[in-house]
Length: 235
Ligand SMILES: C[S@@+](CC[C@H](N)C(=O)[O-])C[C@H]1O[C@@H](n2cnc3c(N)ncnc32)[C@H](O)[C@@H]1O
Image (cartoon, rainbow, N blue to C red; front, side, top):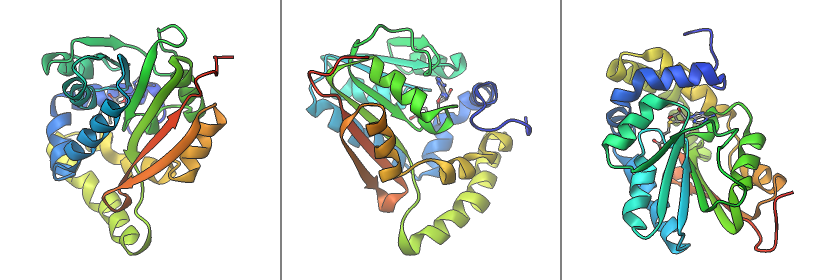
């Protein structure tokens, strides 16, 4: 496994298939439960948009989709992911609509959803602009995209956090999952992932309007939101 990179789709799928059984617990331990609060916050934001249909891309074990399902009982929530093993857990945990699908080639028609979300998934994809353009394609005019992912804190916290990210987290995750390889690239992928304006510029570049970045927990994670203008149609 060591020869893959985190943005190599075969490597990513295989890595998540191997940790699927331990993914939820490992996340909660490594983030000291903060990831639950981040996803709840996202679900509350989604509820404010009153969607009838939501697609959670790269839904994995369904953590975010399930929060949205609880927060928006009137909405049809679909979770898609290209790793069938992760989706098995999502279904067992109560996500009723799941679909094995590559985020870069979604099997949905244009303008199918009111809201598209992606949590800790975009960072692993082979092309950020292509993935964002595909999410835009399946969104209705006036719809919202919400991205939740890791970022790096600014200022005094950045150095100790990087030390944790590169030195402690891979060891801890390796011990918890017995699959250290799968976490080897996490720190590097976070370093390379666009954050703040870097991400909002990417979103604007594929046609989203009013893009905003909101740092969470000293900037360890961020929420990015963008909207499609109501009169805009897919090209
Ligand atoms: C870190 S997990 C995040 C899961 C979930 N969204 C969460 O918040 O816990 C990343 C997920 O992205 C999925 N993924 C990565 N690249 C993908 C792609 N191109 N298409 C579909 N799923 C992808 C992986 O299979 C994995 O389940």
